[in-house]
Length: 283
Image (cartoon, rainbow, N blue to C red):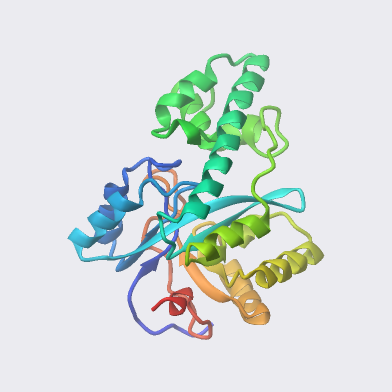
């Protein structure tokens, strides 16, 4: 892959305390700015409640802000995430869909607490609640942080590997929004639908081909190529996939925490020059 030309630093995937990050939206903005990000998106899980604070902070810092959201989807029996970029945060249809998704999250959190209690770990739901600013968005990550801090497990990875990862004893499968509904909400809100971190999903080659095709046919127009969860080898792989399927390319650290995230805000390499960046859809 040839060296890309220098240009603005984009980070179009990050999280705050409004979902499962550890910094307030304004603090995520400040960290992104310190790290040299010039165009930044906050994309909290199934929630737009932090976007006003984020936009104000970015404006004060002189950083371009892209309002976003990351929506949980069930496709072919597994969870995938779709990022909506440059959305209207107040769009009624989008926010109604997100509210229904958050209701599913709240129920799942209580059931996870019950399963952990049955495994001899009582009080984990109550313990996780203070870690979540938004009680509708108590996630597996909040459980994991509580379980590490209370000495039940040595680190986040061990919590997931022993209890909370897909298929583990305290995992509670849930049916999220459909891919069609998710993309419809994003497009209705004026946004661009981006398939987040495809390297994380455990699909066969045929399933991936179907996912890309269905996503594109529904109006999805981009995938994350340079992502915090991708290896350098996957940068190359998903650059080829973006070109093959005709997707725009996005980039984002998926930042959650200064100590937990694999990659900090603004620390990813730029997109390779043979790709069409997602921001051409709105710039």
